Figure 1 (tube, rainbow, N blue to C red):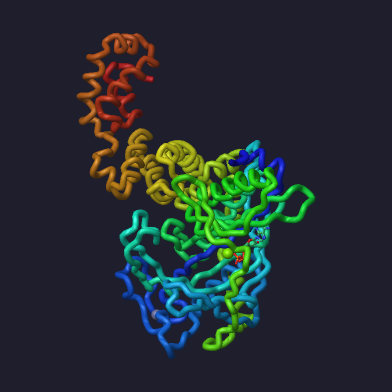
Figure 2 (spheres, rainbow, N blue to C red; figure 1 turned 60 degrees about the vertical axis):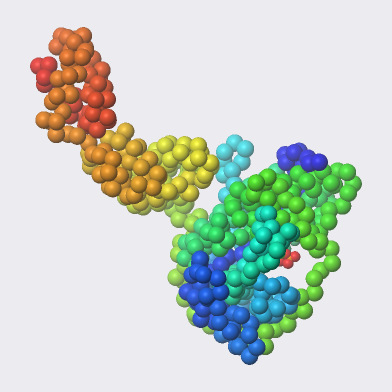
Length: 501
Ligand code: ADP
Ligand code: MG
Ligand code: ZN
């Protein structure tokens, strides 16, 4: 039983909370020198420290501290002048030390915010401020592989294998405060927040932020309450691994909880597992009784006391925030509010701006991304940003058209070639043989054939009806598979028919 999203949100007020884990892109692990490269043979990137062998002593990775502070600064947080790591004690086979080195009541960054834009029903954009509770640093766990079961789950498996390569990779956790006032669109705010956060992190260069590889993953908390009541009990959907899933996870939880509340049932505080295939989640571990992790300050590490001058330097050197950059470019390009909104809603604004940055005129960049590329993305069910063409490549195609070596029709074929993985635009032009034919000798035959094939049109043109030349140009273009330069063809046809304009 569920209540439709829109209906549920007329009856109940939603509160959401997002916990985002980001794997930092440091060269070495958080507390040892092990390599962090993804995809190595199992257990080849390990040492006594990240395997938790007795007597091994950790040392903090300075670059990870720096990255975390930069994230905190980009999210307008206060940076601690002194803080400690803590041991979070629990047993799980993928955690060789039997505790996770994390931060507890002394996080490195606290009390920030991130502004995100969501669109209203009429397409206009509205800014929602998402408050940030904390940004702290911890270490990732290893990975368990259950063998012999049907779906890789532990049920039915004959045995399990553990790979500790990921154990000890620096992991930053960014936790929002409860986000209230998202009204009729908590799912949209959640998705916009994760998308904006991903852009911020990418801009900082601290992580490759690949949701599909798990270097950025989200836990999504949702609760509902009747207007005027206290907040409801939240559920927590774990490890949501795509933007679309973030939105669907909130949506399905709102629909599920509303149905329960309507029937007078209570919401159980629990973790839930999101299923990519159905867009629904199922009940996981109950959180009604808080687990006692017996946190205590990590005795093997000295406190972290970032120098205030260093923090000020990091702050001064932050890159421009994606939202600020967007606003600046919108202004520079004199995009109308309508255009900017259309591009935002289609998920192509940043792509258009990047294409302009790479040298294309704004109008061309806009036409490609709102036109052919948006359609291609749409028909293959991916976000435009996920297409396998970069803004720089689009800009180069635009350049080839401007320079006269491609026609509009050919440009489209070149873009399709790049999308199909045939290489750089120039390579596609070469291998598909798509260069514009403007060599007049090569066109002469096609021009003569067109005149012979449509004597009617030829006569009209000779008699002074120059508009009729369009039909003949069309024939030549067809005969040359779109590779002729239409203006050259037109001139040649008119010359041949003895007409001067
Ligand atoms: P836990 O360790 O149980 O996951 P955290 O404090 O790390 O707890 O994260 C809880 C998340 O849930 C935070 O983002 C918080 O803002 C959010 N949250 C807290 N209360 C509610 C609520 N009533 N409804 C929705 N989200 C909530
Ligand atoms: Mg949590
Ligand atoms: Zn190690």
